[in-house]
Image (tube, rainbow, N blue to C red):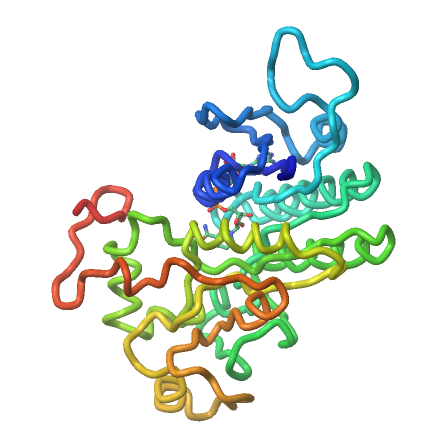
Length: 313
Ligand SMILES: NC(=O)c1ccc[n+]([C@@H]2O[C@H](COP(=O)([O-])OP(=O)(O)OC[C@H]3O[C@@H](n4cnc5c(N)ncnc54)[C@H](O)[C@@H]3O)[C@@H](O)[C@H]2O)c1
């Protein structure tokens, strides 16, 4: 099994992804400015916008021990880069752009120059331009797939798109595999019976900003594992979403009735998510384990939520 550096492992998606990687037998080093408490994972406090720290962290020890193991520490087999501001409006726009592009540039630059052969970066479905559109923006066609031209207008998505271009250039220059995962709204195991999914199911218009799709945090771990297993694809972009639409209608019927002006470019599976994950299934062999219907229980009652919007049931 491999030695994997995860960045942003102390965050929401990272914690669950790391659990899945550990279960698959990988050794993990977490680079993050915040701590993470997991007995099997060392967190090296690393500011990713500082290239010196990134080069150093990627060529250093994997954990603290006395003494350190003899010889040079082994290089990572791969990096899963999740760190960054996870949306707009956490900090002012210029800081979102600076930190999210600089951190990702530094990771890709250092990985390629140190000879690390696989980098998986967290992009976002916001690049399709609807999630943080300026007003109600429509998708150009369905399914929403990786071939669509993208022209987002918000800072967070623009930074993600810049990162994809940096990844593409470095992959071509160094022959490194760099896979960009366009992650959907991440749903943790305890969030299926909260406000977000209740809205998706009972008021389907609320699902538009997320392409009537979602990303189970555990399945995101499965997507990362699939990306680690599959070599030789160079630069690739994948929608990293789950299999099915987030409401109860058949997908084509839903889209035709709600968006009659929007072309449907191929036949969609009965409940296929409009923001389709067909490519990650086809090229990486990803198989979903956590369909939302397995966990959702609010078929006819409202969620009872705590302070953080999560279900308290
Ligand atoms: N949560 C979602 O719904 C969602 C959707 C699409 C894409 N994404 C992307 O997935 C990734 C993970 O998202 P998340 O929800 O886990 O976010 P999060 O905010 O919970 O975690 C991000 C982590 O990155 C760390 N970090 C931020 N800037 C850093 C820096 N400069 N140096 C080192 N560490 C830094 C933070 O300390 C934090 O632990 C992000 O890149 C985000 O843009 C998330």
